Image 1 (cartoon, rainbow, N blue to C red):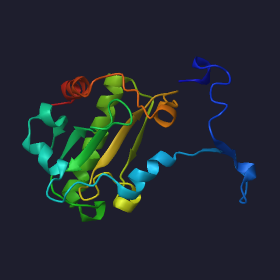
Image 2 (spheres, rainbow, N blue to C red):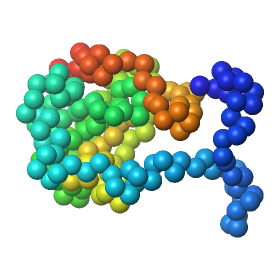
Image 3 (tube, rainbow, N blue to C red):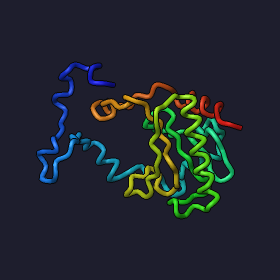
Image 4 (spheres, rainbow, N blue to C red):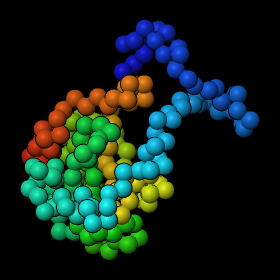
Length: 189
C-alpha cells in the first residue's frame, strides 16, 4: 500500500536510521529494524531429518500437498507460507541439500519447470516481475535446509506494504487452494 492510504504522518514513529548517521560511507537507504525476525534467524524452522515436507508432499494428492505440476526429476509446489500469492517452489524428488549435489537431469528439469512456472504465473496473475532464488544451508536462511528448493515469487508494481513489519501480518488476497487450482489448470500438458 502506498503512504497515501494512511495519513501523511502515519509512520512518523517507525524506527529508521538515516545512513548519514553511520560510521561507513552514507548511501540512499534508510534502515527499518525488524528484531522480531531474530528468533527465526537464530532457531529457524528446520524439521526433523525424517519428517521432510518436500519428501512427503509427492506421496499425497496434488490438492492435499499443493503441488501444481510434476516432472520426472522435480515438481512444483505452492509455498505454504508465501511471500506473495502464487509463490511457488521447485523441488527435486531426491532428498539433496544443495544445488551442486543435483544431477544434470535434475538441474535441467528444475530450470525447465522454473521457466514454465514463470510463464503460467504471469498468464494467470498478470505479475510484473519475479524474485527467483535458492537459500542453501541453514546459515543462508533456508527454511528447509536439507531439501533443495528454488523459490519463484511473483511481484507486482507497488506490491510492497508495511503489514508484515508493523502489524506482523501478511496480506494474501487468495486462498492457497484457489491459487493452486488456477496455476495447475493453466499448466501446459
